[in-house]
Image (tube, rainbow, N blue to C red; front, side, top):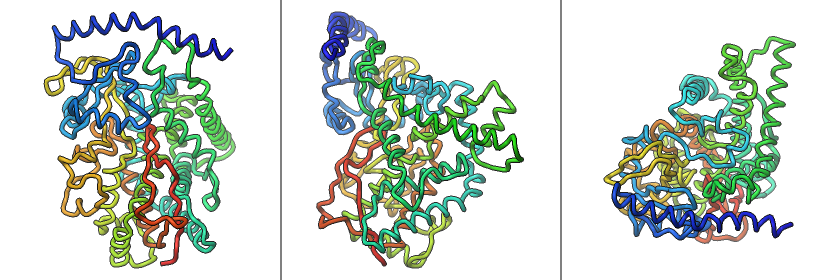
Length: 507
C-alpha cells in the first residue's frame, strides 16, 4: 500500500520530466528573444530550484540574493517565483506597481473548502467583496473611534496577564512568555469577536488552540509539493487536505458561537457591540453579501491568518517572545527600558496606551525587534496579475512574488552592525512601521498592508512595557544571557525554535 502511495506521485513527476525539459528549453529561447527576466540560479529539470530552499528559506534566499541581486527569479517546480531582497525593490513592487501585485499567491491548503473566496487575506484586491470586507475591518473594528472605545478591554486583559505572572513570581516558577501572550491576545480577540474568553487567563490553558494555530502557520509557510506541482493535486501527496481538519475544528467552534448568538437574539434583546453582532447585522441588511457561512468563514480567517487576526495571536506572541529574548540577552538594554518606565510612569504602575508616546526608548526596542524578527519573513506572498516591468526586468504574469522582509531588516547597507540588537539606532530616526519606510516593513505596505496594524501598534508596546515595569526577569535555569538560544522555526510567521521561559522577579 505504501509503495503505491509514494510510487504514483513519483511516476507522475517522472512523466513530467520530458515535458518540463521541453518547456524549459522553449521558454529560455522565447525569453531571450522577447524579454529580459530577472537573474537567478540555473534550475534543474522537474524540481527547478526547490532543492535550494532548505528548512530556512528566508536565510537560503538571502544568500542567493547576495550573488544574483535584489530581484531574483527562481523556478520552484512548475511555479515561477520572484524574490525581492532590498528596500528599493520592495518599494517598486509594493508601492509603485501596487495594482499589478495586488493579488495573493494562494496556497493549496486554503483552497480546499474555498476559504480563500471569503477571506480578506486571499481575495484579489480588485474584487468588490475584498473592498467590502476591508471596509468592515477598517470602519467597525480598527478605526480610531472603535479602538478608543475598546481600550478598557485591552487594559483588563493585560492586567489579567500581570496577575498570572504575579502568581508565577510568588511560586518562583518560570513563565512561558509566548504562551502567556498568546492567551492574552486570544482572549482579547475572542472578546472583540464574540464578547467572551476562550481560555482561562490564569491557567496554562489554550495549549491545544495555540498548537492548532501554530501548526497551520507552519504548514502555510513550508514548501508544499501541490503548490509547486499542480498536477499532483488529485492525489494530495503530503496529505494536506487531511490536515485541513484543523480548519474544520475552528469552523466548528465558530459555528457554535454563531448559533449561540442567533438563539440568544431570538429570546431577548441583545445589546452587544462585538464583531459577530456587526456581521450578523450586515447579513440581515444584505443577505446576499454576507450569509451565515460567510460569517463563519470570516471568523475562521480572523483566527488563523496574520493579516486579519489583528497582528495575530501567533504574530503578537512571537514578537513579544523575540523582544523579551533580546532584552534577556542584553540586560543593560532591559535596565535602560525599566529606568525610562520608572521615570515616566512610576515603578510598578499600570501603563495606558496614551503613555506610549512618552516612552521613546520602549518604542525603539519594539522597532528593533520588528527589524530583526519581522512576524512574516516573506510577508504574505503576492502574485503578478500581468507581465510587469520592474527596474528593467520583466516579471511574468502568474509569478509568485516574495518580499524578503527578514533580509531587508538585516541589510548592512541600511543598518550599521545590522546583526546586533541595538534599539539606540532608532533614537534620532523617524523610520516607522506603518508601511511608508521600506527599510522597515514588518506589516507590509500598500493596499494590502496588514489591516490589524492600528491595534498592534497599541497593544504590543503596552504589553511589553507592563511586563518590564512590573517585574524583573531572569532566564529559566542557569543559562547566561549571552548563551540564550535565538534559533528560528520557519513558517508563514517566524517563531522561536524553543519557547522562551523566564522567571518574573519582584522589582
